[in-house]
Amino acid sequence: MLDYSALSALAAVIREGSFERAALALHVTPSAVSQRIRSLEERVGCALVVRDQPCRATETGRRLCQHVDRVRLLEQELQGTLPALAPEGVARVALPVAVNADSFATWFAPAVAAFAADTPVLVEVAVDDQDHTTGWLRSGAVLAAVTAAARPATGCNSHPLGSMRYLAVASLAYVARHFAAGVGAGTLARAPSLVFNTKDELQDRWVRRLCHRHVELPRHAWPSPEAFVTAALAGMGWGLHPQTLVAPHLADGSLVELVPGAPLDVPLYWQHARAASVLLDGLSRAVLSAARSGLLHP
Image (tube, rainbow, N blue to C red; front, side, top):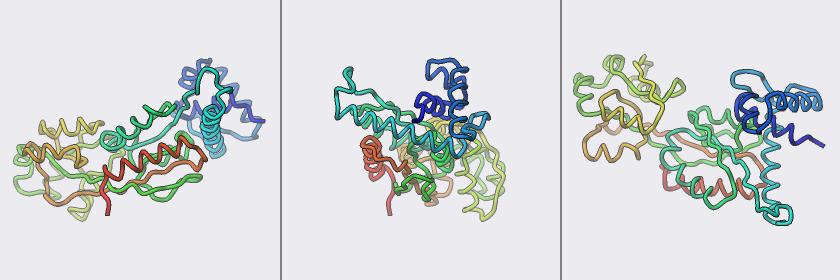
């Protein structure tokens, strides 16, 4: 039999990124976490954790993390059908997911919040670029993710969600100051842009499509979709914004498109572990339903 206290320690290290933070989450000492994982590694005969910053799961470690998360879901469902197993009530179970910031700020959060309000779960949301959230699935750190990858990660199913439409916008005064000569490679190379973080390639993709070549953009790092809008309104820079976030400002003229009629549509997918779980199925239904009204469809 597997040692589930050791498996829980492994899952915590991968999810928290370090032995110290895992110990805090489990209310034990870092030494106890280390001992549990060392014992598990001796049992399976290989390394389970890459001791890095942050810690990462090996392929075997990833499979064990996914196993323990699925077991927790199944145990919680069993408690619901056999109340004698949980005399104090059904315990809430962790449901780790990854999502890109723009989806989280628009259509995703309301749907998942409504699901969690009526379901015995504790949702743990990791926010990352849509081109990188699949990595969270591969590592075993999450059970489901909104991602730009159509191909399912190992052990996962993939469902198309629709496309998020982005518009390149700035304030009217900013456009008059920086793009009086037009929007092209030369002016874009001098005008400050906004990026979410170093992983954010949306602005580069839009510029490459417009100019048919790479342009090195001056960048402000501004890691918040809502703050993106604030920065654009203040004339700090131009950037790609979800259409739903900037629609009111386009309507009142406080923001304008750099090139009208040139959106960037990013297809998104919902990937989740292949687990026979009522909770995971319920979360998937909530996400897919929200995407039908919150995203673009052919």
